[in-house]
Length: 97
Image 1 (cartoon, one colour):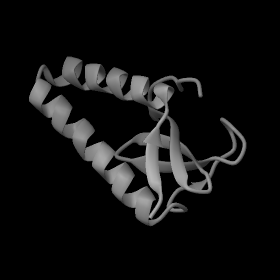
Image 2: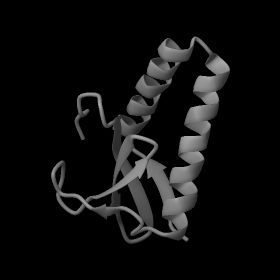
Image 3: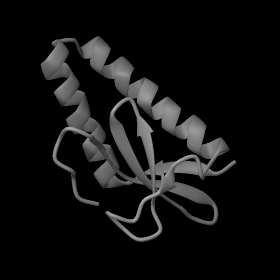
């Protein structure tokens, strides 16, 4: 199994998503749970099935895109790890890589 690492950009995007979910729900618990579930899905899926996402070079070369409940997760497979480059909600502006 490959190790899954989140870049600083991806981590910042997760924080932004947490704030967005909190603004929509006014619930820290729901926001935290949703992000925990998303991170668990990303890590579990990609560590076991690195090519689960489709090839997606629109943001960066040699990247793949995995979708989770309306969120796009852009990642790159390296020799010993998977790097999550960025993630964004499909109906929000894309955040830089």
